Image (tube, rainbow, N blue to C red; front, side, top):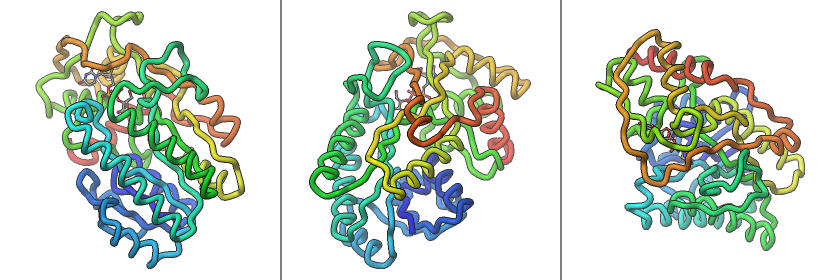
Length: 323
Ligand code: UFG
């Protein structure tokens, strides 16, 4: 069985669904602070917190766990600057609790949710895995530190890991069953779609004088279903004896905030108010990742690489919810 921590969250729930499609059995361990129980449509949902070591011990004793996929974490960059203690406790201390439970129960495989935030402001694009990691937020530092901890555990205790450094996860389940819903929502694509749906008065562009062709920030948006596929490939790679590895998961393409807004207008056929605002602190002008290594190691290629498709799937899911 596969233990999926944070499996009721946005990326975890898509991975859980894909695991079941490929005939894996799963236990979803989630405290439901940000996760949605209705997103867990397959597998066994065990409500619990990684801070609760007794509960974790109970889970590892109750189920024959073969491998862990670790999504549970706090993931708001801005919040992490204001509340670093919460981020270090949840993303680092609780990851160590999980690793210790794995060690006690001789579970040697982990697929870990890392982030392009671990690179900070890159010296060049596209970002490759060998480039220096110099995170600029507590959130990014928690992901970078957790990667170092996994490497130390590998050397000392025979752990095998895949650290998957996501770029901007976006889109929704192509079947329309699952999608992105954060409380509060801070991510660009859902916010623009909410404006298109009339749920928000307007959408803001944070920064219009960046050194990019149209002056707005560029990001590499990667479809959540492509992320799900990469996770299962990473799991199977480790289960068949592959060496521990850190991989970028991006599309290799960058889209500006203005391009995202145009695409939402095209896909939805709706117009809405766009406001120009000051740049958000800590936002790098452009982040685009090379996924060449993931292609070589996992045979992975993004299938839904087009921004239009990403937006179409996210819109379809919002419409299903009745927006
Ligand atoms: N943006 C706007 N207006 C908004 C919201 C966002 O212009 O209302 C811009 C941001 O400035 C940024 C881009 O849209 O340039 C994307 O912003 P998101 O908040 O959607 O995503 P981020 O790039 O800030 O964050 C993502 C992940 C994080 C990860 C980070 C790494 O969500 O988990 O990339 O930089 F850490």
